Length: 425
Length: 101
Image (cartoon, rainbow over all chains, first blue to last red; front, side, top):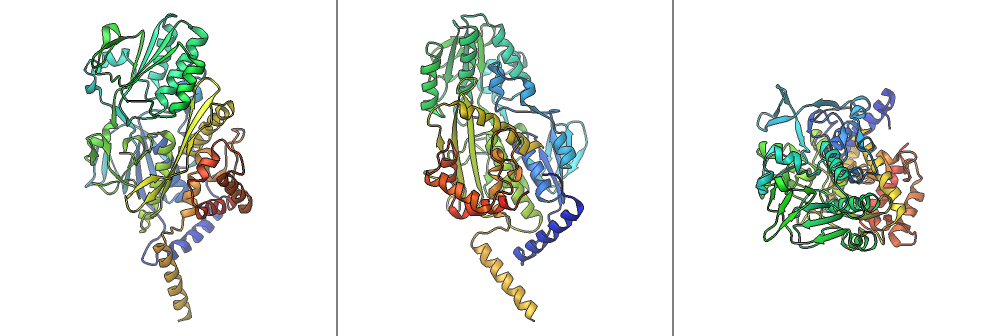
């Protein structure tokens, strides 16, 4: 949809105005004000666009993002597996700027003053807001793996759990590895970003080895007791497609690394790999803690599910992987996009003197590739429950694929194109 | 006076709506949960292989959704997703998409 022509805009405004008057007999009007969004990933880009679209340009939106372009984590395992390129997973912010009138600033937010309603930028200067949205994703707890707690170690032992330079670097390490080598990927204890992602990556690296380096092995070192997502479908793929290539080890938490020898240190064991891919435990992106809002377990932001506002600091909304998740809710890009829409609707109500909708709904769909073409999905729908004050998964709804299939391989790429457009164009 | 009582009636209706958890943008908000796959306001990316829902007649969309929900219409994922919404919510979603261009 294009931004409306003036005449349509006025008509729609009149209709919306009548509706607001009706709904808001105790007050209310057209939303206006300035919303600052920190982080232009799946959550932040979505809310920036939807605030502009749903307010018909009435609300000013500034999006602050440190990267020059959007690079998608979903689909990035195909780049690591060698069947897609970085170009395939990169989208410009020009659509947000030019089509939707979002002011996009490439910078880092270094401080939040919730009392004064201002943020400070790394490049200098401050900005005031009426409502602040933090969509900062995750940062890693490198202190949990002492050998990785320095820049040199982090340049050698990669996570590639934020798409970008590390995605390219991990692909290069795999290309440079000799046939007969070992690639090991470690998974932190849940909750972590993208529950099926590490298992998908293991499949796609094994798929590359099967075709190009058939004597090589993939070892999954999982800190959890069992496969955390799509278990039956993943284990079937490992047996059917990658027998003798993929080895899965549960209860194998990486406690440390020895960088010189590319060795993962477990509680009672050590494991040396040719390519060691350590995904450290995560917490909410740094700016969440710096802003002083309440965290649970010192890691995840505690939010109110009707508006996605911090429970400690109204006026600051938090989206995506940074939040303490609702029951069974995955940390996923799809879910962050849904958070963005929930919060956009709530903010527009709040900016026009109304309460947020009391019945929000969010849903998740996640496609994982088990080879270059075959895909498996998991889906869930979460409805607000006033008794528990959170969104609860709907019993009997959602589920997984009956079996891996190529049709969903096509749907997965269709999903990617549509969600990127829904966020950014 | 007549206008005032009409307004009062509207306000009562609106208040009743609030009591029944209605937000004037409920249909819009619910339909937005579909946009990840079916495009913003139901305008799916052309050539990406997923159905556009914008402008689709309400009855047609609703029938498809109810057939997915009952299991009468085979699907890879929509039978699971439709079960997550109440019939009233599916009605609001179909109504919203029918009004989109």
